[in-house]
Image 1 (cartoon, one colour):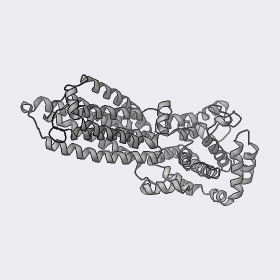
Image 2 (cartoon, rainbow, N blue to C red):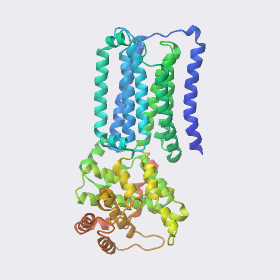
Image 3 (cartoon, helix red, strand yellow):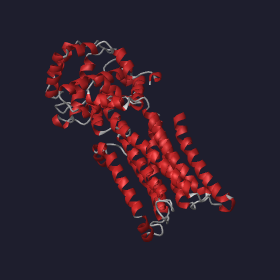
Image 4 (cartoon, rainbow, N blue to C red):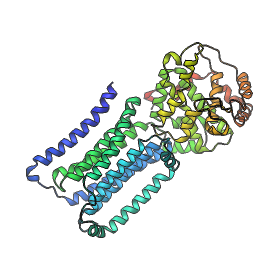
Length: 486
């Protein structure tokens, strides 16, 4: 209830206070006195925008390392905002640009509209075709967009005089940028507010508040009078929007390993290191919520991720996909958050109706994580780890090669850990018996290649399996560290 109230109160106060200040200053300032300080405008806007751009780039790099496409989209949006707003500062009449107001006005409006469009895109589910296409370009998107933006800024400054002559007046009615920004931001606010109520992730509340300030900024920018006191206000609301957004991302992902540590786990495939570098506070929150619901599941998730990574490494899976497997494996059963306790923790045999409910958990997990910026490979693990090679699995009854490879790998690890773990209604099976069952299910439940690799791994590295057994408490501590340890 507190989260629901705060999700309305925080953005409502920010929007109300900002708009209220604009209307009060605009209405009651003494004879609409002007504060015409082009020198201050040039230096303040240009320098602060440059710093904001550098921070946004750092956030984008973090999004790439964490394989979170939402963070990448937000970074690109606020790089656009910072870059175009820097152009707004650089084009202050009397400095680099000799005269005219067409370029600073256009740059200011475009900065907000383009930023809000990327925020809108970040709110879209990551399984949409266009978003999936962009996510495949995630590593190239940030540098490519930054290069295009830099080129556009240089061309705009170089051709400022020509633009002033061709477009002496606004190209579009003032309501157009306002309407576009409002449409993009209101949709994003609606989606992220729902996510905040569900997950309590600070980044989601930050986006709601930041989007609200973008709407306020474009209204003041378009309807304010240049150099009047009320007009200056939108500069502060824009910077506030950037600070809130970046702050939300930093709070969300504070406690991440250093960049050097992330590179280390990328180039030296160590399963434990890969998993720990994949557990951002956001993912850790999902693990904690899962543990609160079912303590076995949280520890099981970690072990499945460990087993799956060793199997994938043995099969020669690319290092880039190992990170996807680590993140997808650690939350592969997160959909069980939505399964009633009386079914999830039932000690006896499930009825057909209860079994049907349990079999929905991959879909629930998929639907949650596609809203959180998880990329295609992680989503495939979450949704398809219960599919069977013969097509009799769930939820989509995929068969053979139609089952994503990482999900096939996770399926072997998932079943092995389930067989060798004690539950309230049965004792743990021995390693040898579990291996025999997995071999028996080759070509029926499991991909034969995965089974062959699993058996070879068991023969080549028996010490790994001995070390993994009987250490649930230590694994649990590593998977869900205490808050003070972050």
